[in-house]
Image 1 (cartoon, one colour):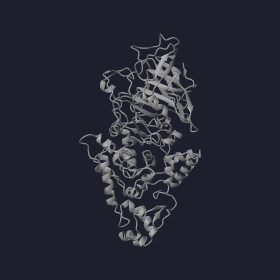
Image 2 (cartoon, helix red, strand yellow; image 1 turned 60 degrees about the horizontal axis):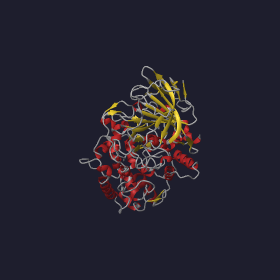
Image 3 (cartoon, helix red, strand yellow; image 1 turned 90 degrees about the horizontal axis):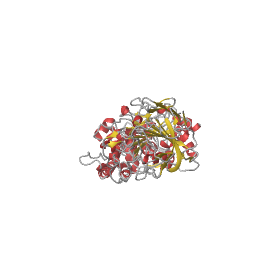
Image 4 (spheres, one colour; image 1 turned 90 degrees about the vertical axis):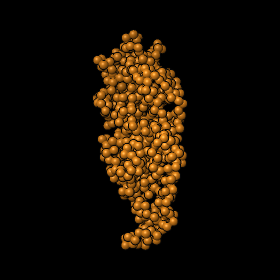
Length: 605
């Protein structure tokens, strides 16, 4: 409880802790991160990056720390001088670089939290927090003990390569009265003030010349990168800046960033916006003609039939409702996760016009296996360590707002996510269709279905209406109650005879979309009983998504039958059969699939 109380005051974790503590109470954050006055202004960004569209400010052109600000500050506050740490943390790649850009935070809260959290790991490695804890000696932290300074070192860092006290005093005569010939205090001034102003500390190191060399290397790297070449002929040349803060150049020269971020990017590195991800396998483009949707059996054009759907991770937390774009889901999955709370994955084929999609949460391993059969672009905000080796495999095209498996991996497309100011984190992370398109272009992800991965044979639909009148042992099911399966959300489905659909309720009220206010409604409801296990003391779960021995229920038109399900391969569609062994026929329309922990009771009446 002590740790949880700290988290409600000062949220510093990314998807890792969002997984450990799935829901935080709505509260104002006490700690605030302040933007250095020498950091880039909104007008400077527009001029330097030759665009007023913040989503076009490619992360390939910015350091990780700077991109954290421009990616996660709400559009309404871009250019302001203050943002909360909560906005910056999710795109954070190296805390030292972040802090060297002039950010500040409550030191005692952060230090005590990290020490307690690391102490609970019992020696287990945790790259994010080990790095975070090692950075707490940074000079830009507020309310920390006064920095220990000698004539050449600041908190143990040796600045002798770039600093000579006599030279610095001669170049800044105004310090004669306030500091005088006091080498340690002159070094303190240089580190805390002079570096941010781009001042020289000695006669031998010219930071401007060093910056020009670094910038030239960055630009050459960007010009030859896969992400830039994918933009095609006529694309604006990259800005070729390593940073817009002098502190980053000094930090690079002195080797401050060895813990995480590279100093001079090389081809395929993270400053190429994870160009390695762009090399993910594509075996060709699947081509479908106009006909019926594989998701709903409704008429669809050839162009729409070939678009890759999104698989969007969305929360069920009460504070997170309603979500934007969830009514566009033609197939909606819901599965339990740790903390006795479920999560949703929305399969959205028609997404190109959505200006806000989400809010977004982290993924779990079993969702990836559920998603694969649709060949989607997976949209999530981090994940858990159990996803390593799957989420980063060549066949997966994913966009993640932070480390893709929580404690590591890449953050493909992170610069295109954004946060809103109408809700508290972690319930305010989103992405837009425009951002997805730009991220896919940058990463080399195809937005049309991939031959070799996509399987056009999914559900079996009825040629007319399947009212289960001929099915043996069909039972009336006007109300479906999944409270025992998902006890936090208490989801229920009520059959509406006038529309022939099941209307979904959550937390005792209508489950709606924030865009249009419409209640979610499904022609088909499938409950898929699934073997599961608890993987660790944190409560992370595992589900056996590949199986041929489990059963479930199929609800449609106010009736229900018992079914069995089979899934034999990652990209093989899940098949559902009645007790006679015949594949069930779904009705035209949307489908809800609840993955139930085997042994949980499904109620209907």
